[in-house]
Length: 450
Image (cartoon, rainbow, N blue to C red):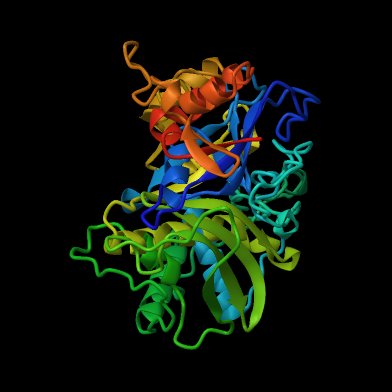
C-alpha cells in the first residue's frame, strides 16, 4: 500500500501459450507470465522490476527465462559511477556538432542496432480483461509500434581518407630527383600536422563559453581526472549555437500512481514524458518511470529525419545524467534501468556498454556484475548467474494465505477468500502468481478475483 493509502490492483493471466519472438522471430518461442495493472504504486513496481517484471503500458510481464527462446535479463546501470565509452562520446560530439554548426551526419551511425522493438515481443495477443472492476478506460492506452526502448550506437568510424589503390601506383616509374631543396622547410609527418591542428582547435574552443547546460557540470578538481558525463554533454557548445535543444518534462498517464515523499526527488515519483524540442519543434519523446531506487527507461520515439544523430543513445546518456541529478535530491535513487539485456540477440547487446552495470539473476533475484555474466551467457542463453550455489530467493513465497485479493470490492487475505469460495479451483493459479511476485509484494498488491 502506498503512503496515501492506495493499493496496487492487478489481474493475472498466466503464461502457458507461446507467442512470436520479436528478437529471433520464432513463431511461438516467446513465453512470459503477464498481468494487467489497473493501478500500481511506485514502490510495488520497483519491487516487481527487481524480480524481473517490466511494464508496457498497463500490461506487466515477466519472461519465463528457462523456457523462452531469447532470455531477457533485467539490466541496471550504476549512474553515479557511469563514464561514457568511446562510442558514447562520439554520439555526444555528433549531436553537439549539429547543434553548434548545423552539420547533419550523412548516414545513420548505428545502422543495424535499432534497439528493443516495443509491443512486438510479449503482448501481441494480450487483451484487456473483459470485466473492469474499477471502470478504467482502457481506450486511453496508446500502442506505439514505432518506438524504440533505447538504441545502440555501436558504429565503426569511417577513415578520413582511403589508402591509394595498388593498381594505380604499380605502373608508375620513379623519376630521378635532385635531392631536398635547402631553401624550403623540412618535410613534416602528417601525424605531427594533425596534432598541431588539433591543438589549435582546442585553444580556440577554450576561448568560447558554453551557454546551455540543463544540468550544471561539476568542476574538475584535477586535470588528470577524466571528464564527467555532464561535461561531455555540454562540450563544444558555443555561446550562440545555430540550433537550440530544450527539454520539457510532464507527468503522463500510466498505471503508476504519482507520489511525492519527503526524501524523494523534487519532481516526485511516477511516469513522465521527457520531450526534446529543437528550435521550437518537438523531435523526440522519452517515457520514464521515476521510482524510489531508479529511473527506468520505458521507451523512446523520435522523428525519422533525425535518426542519423543516434537519438536513442543520446537520450539514454541524457537520462543517466538526469538520474545523477535526482540522486543529489534523493540519495537512494542511484540506478538507471535500461529494460532487458538479451545476450542471445547480438543487436540487443549494446545495453551492456552502459557500464558499470548489473544483470538480475533469474533464480535468486540478486544483482551480478555484467562482466561476471558474459562468459556464462556465451555458453548458454539461460544461466542462473549467481555464482553462490547455496543462495536462494530471499523473498520467496512462504504463506499463500496472506496474499491479498480483491473480491466483490472487498479486500481480504486469500485464506479468507478460499473459505468463502469453497470448491474454488484457482489455488494453483494464485500460487503461481504469488511465487512470481514474492511474499513481500503478495501481501501488498491486490489480486482481482471475479
